[in-house]
Image (cartoon, rainbow over all chains, first blue to last red; front, side, top):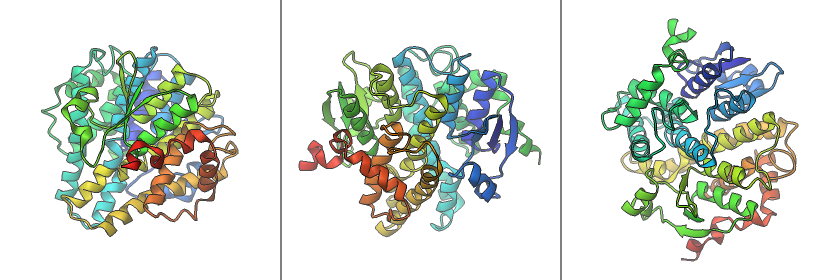
Length: 214
Length: 214
């Protein structure tokens, strides 16, 4: 398998964690987003949406969208499971993941921040305030949900990592990059710490990837 | 079941379609977003994220996030299936759905457009241009993917509606509201038309819901 990705891409980070949790080896293919390498003709042939991550399987199939890729990996390689067995639990884990992957991350994506700069003309301080606003809006709800729900365990759901933790850790990484105050989110911080004690999470971090050295 | 939703909410529209496709009756509970009814204390107790849709089950459990709800409905009521059986097909359908639900819709959500107005101070024309920019960016990739992939059939994937169509139709509805030129997207338009021939899709449309009459 080849993972087309970028070290700082939060969605790429999710797939790296899932591959590590499943113990699946992969070839790392870097596409530098700030150099627009994901908009090249060659990459658009591979993924018409022109976004990372994309997972190129050994049979030539190309999978896109990080959460769809993680669900595929979970269906193709069921152990260890990344979703609980019971239907309510599965719905909760997917909802937690989507609260991050749909309601926080897309609004703060690089291309959105770039649009705020050009054509909208906003300075760095305004873009940073935008970033923090949407993280806070999302984390406020996430913290209430995690702190108040009996199914929250060592991880977001129970005592093993799931799709929800796979989305949580990259989002906390991003929040720290933009100096978001994580004080109001003790449960988020606690689970983030528990995850990073696992090599599958720690080894997937942006600073451990090949681009970080360049 | 009670569906907490709002007629113009695109994510609510998705869940209405899924409930209709499954033939599941539900009680319609309206939360007027422009009046901020989804931020009330009562609703925050129900859904700490303060977002619609939320599906309140007869056992009292509350499910959130539209795609998680649709996957739950599909697992709890398997017929007719909203995802294909084969793993590659499932990954493709989820990726198409997420290309809309993660990469287009969140950036154009009401609360984001409101932030562009206050505090950022952008006028209606600038907000409309923002809206059209992200729909076009998303639909460009979606059209390439749908037009170029052998698994595209009468619907986004094969000849029966799936989670991908459930996301496509509300997004096209929104695009029309904002006068996006759909000329460049013939496959998107064709599939949208095929879907609307089905009562499950047509009856879920915003103009058919109780708030539309008020």
